[in-house]
Amino acid sequence: MDNVLHAGDAGDVHFHIYVPDSYDGTKTYPLFLTMSGYGGMYFQGAGANLTEEPFALWARQQYPDMIIVAPQMEAWGETYADQVLALMDYLLSEYRVDENRIYAEAFSAGGVTMSFVLEQRPDLFCVYLHCCSSWPADPTPVVKTRLPVYIAVGEQDEYFGLEPSREIYEELQELYRQQGLSGEEIDRLLVLDVKNDAYFSERGVEKQHEGGVLFGEDPEIMGWLFEKRK
Image (cartoon, rainbow, N blue to C red; front, side):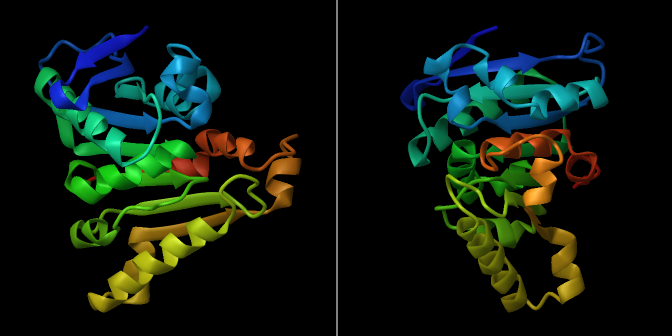
């Protein structure tokens, strides 16, 4: 289950990968990068990210002909973005990937790292799902490439809170306005989805931050993600 990429100056990158049984190198396959939160870090156990969060499991069930990769960082932040990018370079050289269908999702702490990944290489992806997190990196490159972004968070998120999600949504929105995009055009590229108490309580979940993993089983959210193409 534990794969290790020795990525030179970036260090060792631990990851788990699902490759469809049908893969034989004769055609291209879409790829889904899923970045876990704190509970899926490498020191918490190899493959822990796959048991903590349903994003990869749902994708595998719904899209069996998709390569799914789940890195396991030692921590999060700008330093680890280089590891993610090294892993992506490796995957694109090792597998026949449909470069018009490279999807990304990050939850909680994974979203912090992913913001720095997107600061460097937003062009790698066709869409990004940002769940229950913050975005400390510069979002300008995301706007320049017009990468579609879906931001999902609980109204009463106990860890990061609602504000970081609202702030990055408003910042991206303003950057698009400065580019001359209309409200309708922005809405096609950018979504802020704030879930209220009922969304979680109806599903038997009390803590909204931990409950953000429910987004990985929400057909509306995940459907929006996987319908995108470059």
